[in-house]
Length: 190
View 1 (cartoon, rainbow, N blue to C red):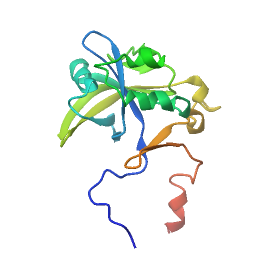
View 2 (tube, rainbow, N blue to C red):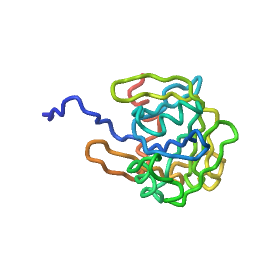
View 3 (cartoon, rainbow, N blue to C red):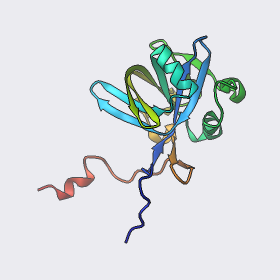
């Protein structure tokens, strides 16, 4: 037996993406966006969906660039705050004490304290209902040195990303490994 919830935005978990951008005066801004994810591997692209009335939307359309920053659990309050106020009304970086760093590759800032920064050049814009999907071509991914394993690869446990649950509005911690990808399903192969 299942309970029907109708047409809802329930897909677990959702990412916690902090989208970094510059306004027309070069002032850094960031917003919390949960509607997004990798959408192409070649070219490498990531998408995020925003409402057109957001300051970040105007910034991205102007600069044709943005960053996706992944906060660790340590910065959950700052990440949440970035989704609660508008960059039109407050300097979010000044208020939180976080540090915007100018990307060398795109005209957008990344957040120094967050473990992962994905630098993107605007590739495509798709209007979908009340949201506009912005697809960014990934030009670089920067991961803090202390979040790498002994082989120099990203260590998800050290990155310690947070996740979001739509509808019930909770942030979750990253969990333990459940299985090895492209291995667990081998039991069904002949």
